Length: 164
Image 1 (cartoon, rainbow, N blue to C red):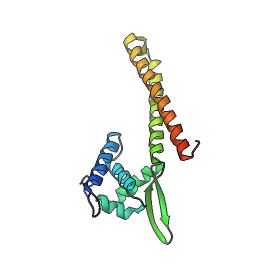
Image 2: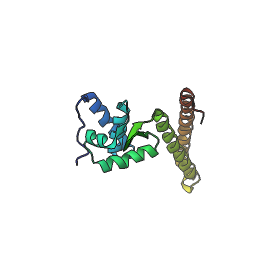
Image 3: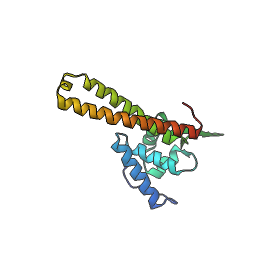
């Protein structure tokens, strides 16, 4: 089944299609599967939880691919599973704090990048003034970005009533 086809279902507008595909490309550019981005985008646009069958049908993707990627998005904290009484199917919905979760993941990545820059600063190559200045510039920029992302996260958590 072709998972790269343009999404279009009854009741879905071309602007929704565009959003889904643009979001999917952004996820793909960050190293994630395009189908994961399509799932996340579809659920961001859906006011209610959707069963895997409906997600697969709307995105014209295999149920196995949707299931695998929905579980990954759940682990990332972007989606959550929901259930309905008397229904054994898995339903997924976008988490209300998905934006915070995205920023938290970015912060984790930024911290790993900073740790790598610190290792680079301890290398023999860092003895050269050009290399040392490159790494110092990276660390300065990173420090500034980290402080701002952390401040933004604190504000978003406070607005959502979370303190972690």
